[in-house]
Amino acid sequence: MSAVVVQGLRKTYGEVVAVDGLDLVIEPHEVVSLLGPNGAGKTTTVEVLEGYRRPDAGSVSVLGTDPMVGGRAYRERIGVVLQEAGFEESFTPRELIRLHAGYYPHPRAVQEVIDLVDLGEKADARVRTLSGGQRRRLDLALGIVGDPQMLFLDEPTTGFDPSARRRAWELIDRLRDLGTTILLTTHYLDEAQHLADRVVVIDHGTVIASGTPEALAASAGASTVISFRVPEGVTTADLPEVGTDLRVAGTTVEVRTPDATRDIHLLTGWAVGRSLSLDGLTLTRPSLEDVYLDLVGEPSPTDETAADAP
Image (cartoon, rainbow, N blue to C red; front, side):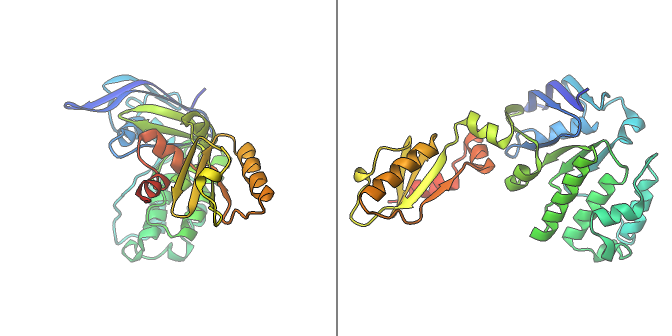
């Protein structure tokens, strides 16, 4: 049985359509990242799955339960890490984790949770003394203390330094290995690319793409980019015919190609035959960011640089 099944989900706020016929399936033990621009419907969709919003139309099942009628039994099976949460400043992390553990029938051990989120040095300090990143780790601790089957993570590493982000990623990887199904929303596309088994892109309240980053790149037509500096005394007219789109930014040429192997062979063969050097030759595969920006209709940084070039 799928962990999440959403069919035809619709939610409006007055005349504003937040979610418009959205379909979504998440399999057990899968980590799915939900991406989309601000106002795309991500937050409303997640709140419906958590049971905090009632849909206007469509059907929703999470762990075989309708979140709106699952009650306490449902909430004991899920974990929620909100983008922002408030804490009683005079408590310590250990006290808060112990308190929240009491809400669940089979919680993780308090010390285990403290170790998992790397809060050992601050476990007995007052919350008011914690840094922003440490508070975020406490958010994560409270989300996993109930040993949830389904975990909702909303921007889980906001405010983390690079080292703390890596440790959080390792924790999420570990939770997946332990069998937790995870729905992740994030604005860090490298985070989604690293963590997610599958990426779902939504815009205007509906799913516009779904798949692995590699599959999305293929379906969106995102091209590999070959770049190099033009050899002295050579113009772009002298280059062999390669790729589907050639752009010049200063002395650098960028070639977008669906067949990188063929075009690299043509370019290097052409250069060797003329005793030329293609300085700065690089091959860049499309990243999740490139694919995402293509899907939601925003120019990538590379496009903007090329457009600004004389």
